[in-house]
Amino acid sequence: MFGKILIANRGEIALRIMRACRELGIKTVAVYSSADRDSPHVWFADEAVEIGEAAPRESYLSISKVIQAAKATGAQAIHPGYGFLSENADFAESVAAAELTFIGPPAAAIRAMGDKAQAKQTMKAAGVPTVPGAENLAGEAEFLAVAEQIGYPVLVKATAGGGGKGMRVVRSAREMPEALDSARRESQNAFGDDRLLIEKYIENAHHIEIQVFGDKHGHLVHLFERECSVQRRHQKIIEESPSPLLTPEIREQMGEAAITAARAVGYFNAGTVEFIFDPRTTDFYFLEMNTRLQVEHPVTEAVTGLDLAQWQIRVAAGEPFPYRQADLTQRGHAIECRLYAEDAAGGFLPSTGRILQFIEPRGPGIRVDTGIVTGSEVTRFYDPLLAKIIVQAEDRPAAIRRMRAALKETILHGVTSNLDFLQAILARPEFAEGQIHTRWVETEFTWQPPAPPLEALIAAALADAAIENRKSEIENRHEPDPFSPWKSGNGFRN
Image (tube, rainbow, N blue to C red; front, side, top):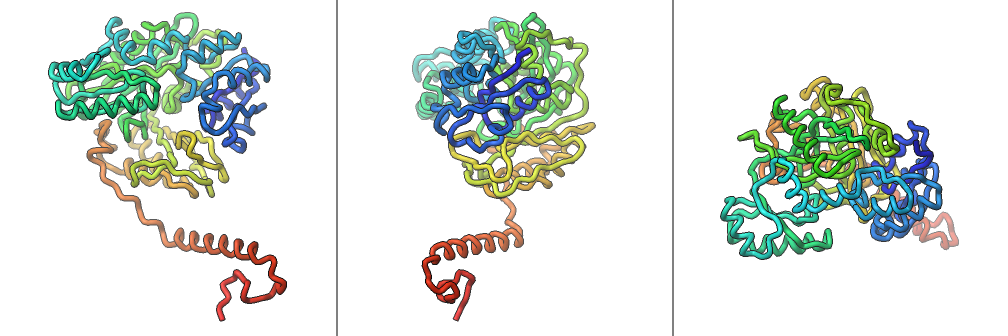
C-alpha cells in the first residue's frame, strides 16, 4: 500500500479522496493555486504545495508542476480526481514515466475513450449498441447526406469533447451550416480540436450510466446504474439510483454492455459507461465512457455500500477487487443534488463572491460532500460546484421527501445559488413520476425564484448600513474633534 498520495485536484473531490486516504492510513499532499491558498483542501492535507497562479493552465493543468510536487514531497502515487487532468492520457503516461502510480485506468484506455469517434468505432466492433450516425466526416455536404439518411433531428457534437460543449441539435437542413460553424468554434476553444461527428437525436431520451469497476487482475464488474436525466445545458443537476425506468432485465442488459465496453479497451479501476435510453422502445445506445471517478459516485456508494475512492487506491496498489457480480446488490434508493454557485433564473450564469454563511443539512441518511466553509471565496477560475447533497432512504418516495427536507435545511448566503431551483424540481409531479428527460428543464420546466423574505431584506439593509458606517469612521479618523456630529457615521440628523 502507498504511504503518501498527491491529489491533483481541488474542492470537494480533493477532500473526498483525502478522507479515503486518512481511513487507509495514507498521508496526503494537496496542490493549490494562488487563488486557493485558504481553501479547505489545503489545510486538510498533511502537506500542501503551491503550484501556480489562479488560471488552471498555470496550476492544476500543469503536468510538470504536479509531478514535480509529487516528487518533491515523496508521494508514491497521484490521484487526479475528476476534471482537470483526470482524463488526460499524456498525464497518465507522464506519471508512469516519473515512476509514480496513476490512480486510474491505463493511459491506452483513456486515449481510446477520449476520442468520441474512435470510442464509437471500438464499441461497434465490440457489439455494444451505438446511436445511428457517422464519424470522420469532411464537410457540410457529408453531414447533410448522413442527416438525410438517418432522419432529422440529428445531433452534431465534438469528437474530442464532453460536458455538452461543441454540441448542437439540428432539426432541418437549413439549420445545419450554422450548427456546424458554432459547434466547431466551441469545440476548438474548449478542446483545441474542431472535429465533429453526427448522430440521430433521440427525443425525450433518458441519460442512464453504468458504474464499472475492475482490478489489475482482469476482474471486472458493474455496480448498477445511475439515472442522470435532470440536466441543464447537457450538465447533470440531479442523479439517482436505481433508475425508476429500468426493469431487472434491461438493467442486466445494460450492465453486460458496460462490461463489454470496458473489456474492449482493457479497462481497470473506476469508470462509467454512459447510455442514451429511449423509454418508448426501451432501446439503449452507447454515448461515451468517462475514464475516471464521477461527480455522482456517492449515489452508487450509498446503494452498494462500497467506498469507491478507497477501492480506487487499493486496486491501483495491486489489490484484487474481491466482489463478484452475484455479491453486489442495490439497497434502498439514493439521490444526489448538485449545489452550484449560479443564477438559475438568469441563464445559469456563474456567481462569485465570499460565502458569508454555509450550514449543511444533517440527519440520518444525509451526506454532504463539499469544498467550502463559511468565509470561502468563490472565484471565476473554477467550476461553480459548491457541494453535493446526497440522501438515502428505503425507497424512492422516501428519498425524495428526505432530499426536499435536506434542501430546506441548507443555508447558503453570499453567492447566488441554485438551491431554490433544486427544490422546485423535486416538488414537481413529473420528477416524482420519473418522467423527466434530458431536455425537460429547457423545454418544459417553468420556474420563478421566490421573493426574499422581509427578514432577509431587513438584515441586508442593516448589514449595508453597518458597512457604510464603518467606511465613514475610517475616512474621518483625521477629524480633530472625535465628538463632532458632522463627521459621525451613526445617522445623526440636525
